[in-house]
Amino acid sequence: MCVLEVMKEIASQRDDFNSDRNFVAASMRFFLDLDALPECRAEMTVIQELFSLEDCISFELAEHLMGEFSNIADFLEENLKTLTKGSIDGDLQCRLLIRAVRCAIDVLDTVLNVINNLEENNK
Image: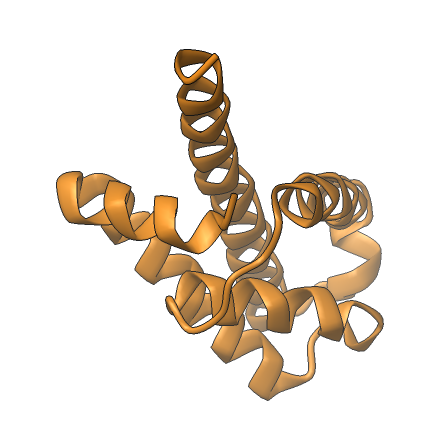
């Protein structure tokens, strides 16, 4: 089942979900433009395109990205002081990235739960 179609359906029904989706899409665009986390550029691009409602991904890829993003957020939180080296701007940007990544995980979790419920109801 295509994650995009379910995401569009939820976004049309829930303003809070749509707001979170837009926040993640805009944040990913911002951090891609900054070239933050170049080693995660591919994952960030997939999320940005999905959350901008431009591209569909599979359930399995969404699960994989949730795991990857969880690892990224954990790493950033654990190494915040080292990564930002006392820079206020760097600290704020890193905290915004952590927030965007955690929000992306929550949105994907909501979508995957809806898909699971739909599949269980169709059995």
